[in-house]
Image (cartoon, rainbow over all chains, first blue to last red; front, side, top):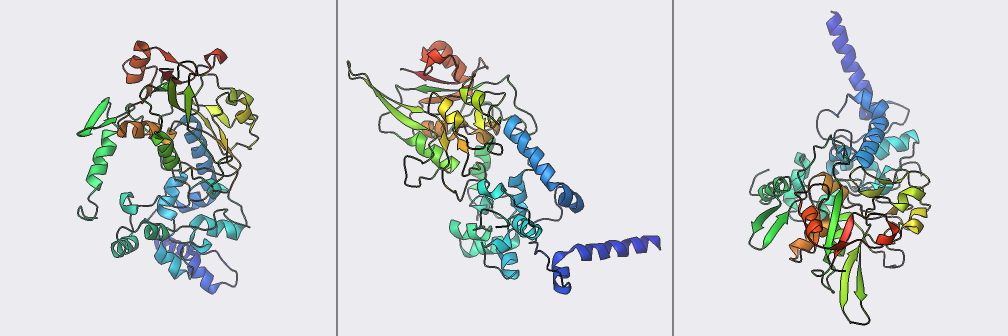
Length: 168
Length: 249
């Protein structure tokens, strides 16, 4: 019985935490969080919500000063999964490449927290996705339809025109 | 992902594994030799002072009109001209020298000289301008305030200030307005066991005027070359002991 309650409450929590579901029902506007590739982030989601900035900052100093280039907490690795996919962006009612599609920007804009990362850092993995370890089925379809078109791939990979980040 | 759709994957895998070998030179095809820096250090390992990265430039092999190293640098690091040469970022420049009395002329690339005692690091008020344990001098843009003190301190005029908003930066080389930057010996490539972009291009073009490697490792090509041939540092009088050395000047 306890197990059932536990299961049910976990399911309920998962539902409450899924933003699009809430956004439809709630009177309070909520951020649209684009779906990421893969099942699980590098840490549990609650840890990522609270501590992603610490992980990133620690990694940044390790990389800059000591040349440690592990990918687990690197910003480049974030974008491998979190750079917006064209299908998701379209589903959210946004034109591809506009601010609506970016995982980091969407939430930071909502929270009113300015991020400077993307003034310097690329907002998407580099050009030819053929060399990326993860290619979603959606991207694969588009790739097949537009073979050899690097510009198209860039667009699909979620170019974010607004490079200055959130909270203008 | 079938082999047919991505025919170059196997080749790329071969190339990237080739880059991690300790072999000094791997012949890829007739006339094309891939020289590798050293074994790639494990990603989780910090750089140490056991390694001292250096660059040896043979000015007798560097030809006058050639700009391959400069364009390779621009391409790899995403340095795009804004059409304003006075403020465009420049990490390498070609310098032409001429002895007026004999008429003998040289052409040589000049970039950050990666000094052992870098004046840019001495003057930096925030610690952004720094030297890594392995001798690479670079700017931590996260803490650079853009005061440009280092630019004034550098006797080689190696640094550039980014004056304008940038877009489409390369993922491996973040850059942005308001920071000072310079050659970092392609630090992300070197950490991965690859050669700097300029060195790779120079040998791909068949000039082989640049040797990159560990000056502390007596078996490396660069250590053997500096032992065998007379080489010079620019402005030796300043006693900064740059990691970049020149042969033939």
